[in-house]
Length: 584
Image (cartoon, rainbow, N blue to C red):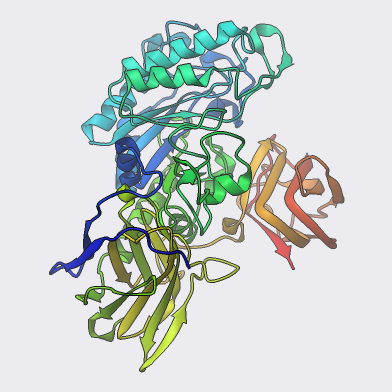
């Protein structure tokens, strides 16, 4: 057990509103600590991604770079609607895709003709970035920008001249639109593209090509309060978590090595002995894709899936970056809007009443720190919240939870983890979910820490069960899967770790034949490089009888499934009502 290194005085204070908090006096920090910018970022907890570009009108995720600017002519573009929806959904800010990989700029950049200034929208006089930045200020939401380093349109991509162009555009965004809370650089770099008509493949070294040190210095000068998300060579203020499925590890350290490669286990779980503070930002979309596709209207994340995402991001010492794609008319789709608002309402309902009553000062003995919380009138509860004061570093390594039920202490575990009890790190906030218990006391014991624990807040709550009678809580089988479309006729499903799969099930669209798969090929891989064909064939009579179709095959180890729609009944993009993967 780690020897406690720092003597700290912790005095628990309890308000009349039953909020359990702690007043902390610490003489020194331990290990890396967050900057003021990182502290402000962590307090945001949830903010929105907005994906909107020419991809919205070509029904694809990645544009090639030769799409016609005349496609951009939304009939009812309303940035204030976006902001109102995001605010009602509990988002504290918005990051906007000012330029995606296709290179089309959503502001009238002085450095390219490939922008909204050459679209019919507002006769070329519009500026989406400006309208959104102003709408955010009106509603007191923070504003930020995504600028893709990869540009499949620009003729000089891959040459030094493009880096100058890239920085010039970044300077425009950082000087013309007010305060920016985050600058987001996508990790996708290099590949095939239009490149000014060359129509070729170009490869770059994402760690060295962009000259990140000089780019970061410019950001620090122009937007000194912004945090930097970067998946390239230089370590930014924030890190990717290794997946877009909407979860981070149950063990999640906010520290990373200052230099070197960052394999999945570092991104997903952090590094306990890392020498820089670099917390994980959990990004995912409210739909399967990042951009709007009409065929995904039935696949907006359910309320229960969104709550699962919340617990596995904000509840695991991370912030949640939740994407709301913009529909072709220039607005957030009503289904996405209503689901996002229901999400915020469920969070508020789940954590409205802290059931913990005033308690004594924590007990310390042999390096173990124990808090015993009395519960209001022996009420039922199913959530526990703990927060460290991360200004002094992240310290807690392991803890236990016990409930006093009928005079007997019963151990509790995190029901959202598959292996172990899940009671490891805390950081800014840790939320533990467990089956509802009725108890008179809860015992929270810190059994291992890097230094004297500095606990800022504790709470005990009773969250509603997400059953079908709760509006918007309906769960599709596909809600538990992370899937996306690599092309209009190809779907990929991936997992964080290897699965043993035995069959795949497909339910075609129920209201239309458009996108119904009649012939298919199913592939599996463990490494994204080597693929094994599992099955191919026809869904017989699926057009006339659109029921569940099952593809069976011998048990196979896989981390990725790939479904190719070899033939569709109608239309050009595959569609489904639901999908399911059967595992052992």
